[in-house]
Structures are given as structure tokens and as C-alpha cells.
Picture 1 (cartoon, rainbow, N blue to C red):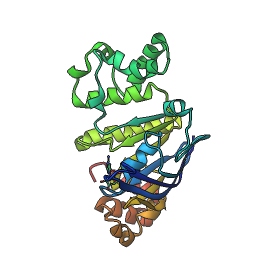
Picture 2 (picture 1 turned 90 degrees about the vertical axis):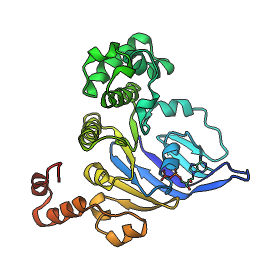
Picture 3 (picture 1 turned 90 degrees about the horizontal axis):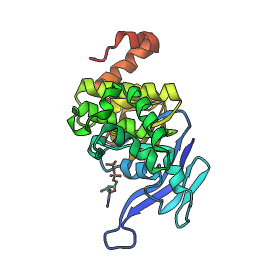
Picture 4 (picture 1 turned 180 degrees about the vertical axis):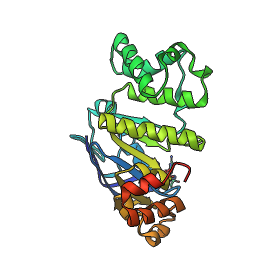
Length: 274
Ligand code: ADP
């Protein structure tokens, strides 16, 4: 399912003395089955864009297209609930949203809320718990007896149980150590490839964007200012500096290595610890 923003502007608290313009004519094209990263400094508008991707926010001006559905300023769309089913959002610290007595009930909650039978929802829980690399014996435990890493995986399983076509990741590695961060990012990468999902990573990590994304959109001061493949975008160090983004040493090093050796050999030379 393609997602497109066409000249989207958005103001918080519109029409009140607290009105705050956050997006100015943003264009964004996310192609089905691709891994797309949206990067930008703090306050550049990433979270506001994210909330348009499943119509949590509606544009003040412009159009959001989610598959065949159009979401436009001032117009009602009766199919929003259906549309949202197809788009799973893994919010920052998703484990904070766990609340049920058991992991099983927690994972089944989303699908059942959308009319899936208990039997089917529980069957999905058994399936997705393995997808996120956990043993299904964990399903009978309380989510609050798990480690932080396990809780995050359970929360991700809850999103997968909805069988989304699109997954939006909001800084999914916040608060994790380097090993945990690597494991979670690899999990999403595998999921995207195995299920041909559309993955949208919202992040300020240039490393993650460089390593995983097929396409990048750079946000700056509420505008989408650059779009392209990571290796093309990261070449223009001066332009990125204007947007308060700095290409990390490891990425610059990898790009130089790739230029000399070609991408396959360069990958072999670089390990995670680099
Ligand atoms: P990012 O996710 O890149 O840090 P945001 O989308 O959160 O950026 O913020 C974009 C702009 O919108 C900022 O100027 C921010 O202060 C403002 N903003 C964000 N959320 C709200 C809100 N709930 N009310 C008013 N202004 C907001």
C-alpha cells in the first residue's frame, strides 16, 4: 500500500491563541514494500508527519493518500478505522502500552478490538511471539514480569498480530544498548523482507537510516527538503549540515570504502562494532 502526502500543512490548536504551525507543504512518497526512513533534527516535524501516516492527525491543508483512501482537510472519510487497521505504529517505548494480565491477552487485544474472534486472535499470538524471537511459553506470563527487551518484543508482537501491511517505527531503539539496538533493527529488517512489508522508520539516527533504508526523506523546519537513496543523500555533507545533520564517521567511512571496493566487499570488511 503506497502512502503519499501532497503539500500537507498542519497547525496544532488551529484557530486558538495557541496555534502552532508544524508542517509547511510537505510532500512525501512511500512506496509499497520499501523501507523508508524519515530523518531530521528535533522539532523538524517527524512526529507530526508520523501521525498523518495513519490519520491520527488530519492535514490542515493538502492531501494524505493511504492506499486508495484520501484524507483531506475539512472532509470526512468514513473508512478511517479500516485504513488504520493496515498500518501498525510501534511508538517510542512501546512497552509502556502493555497493560493486560498475560502476554497472550495483551497481544490478542488489538485484533479482538477490530472484530477478530478470540480463537483467531490467540492463534495469531502464538504465531507472532515466535516471529519476534520469543518462546510461546512466555504467553502465560504477566508482561510486567519480563525483562525490558522481552517487553519491547511483546509490544511489537501486538502490532504484528494486527497483520499490518505497513509498519511505522518511531525511534524504535530509544533506550536500548548497542546490542539490543542491533537486534531490534535486524528483526525489523528481516520482517520487512520476509513479509514484503512497507516499513517507515522515523529516526534521528543516520546510522540506522544508512544501514537499513531503501529511501530517505529529510525533514527540516516542518518541510520535506530532500528525498533519495541514502548513499546519494549522505554524499552531500555540506547540504546536510545546513539541516543540522551530520554524517556519522562510520557511515562516511563505509561510503569511502564502498567507492573503492564496491558494496559487497565493503560490507564484508565492516562488522557491527565498527
Ligand atoms: P520532531 O518529531 O521532528 O521532533 P515534531 O513533529 O514533534 O518534531 O514538532 C514539530 C513542531 O511542532 C515543533 O515546533 C513542535 O514544538 C511543535 N509541536 C509538536 N507537538 C505539538 C503539540 N502537541 N502542540 C503544539 N505544538 C507542537
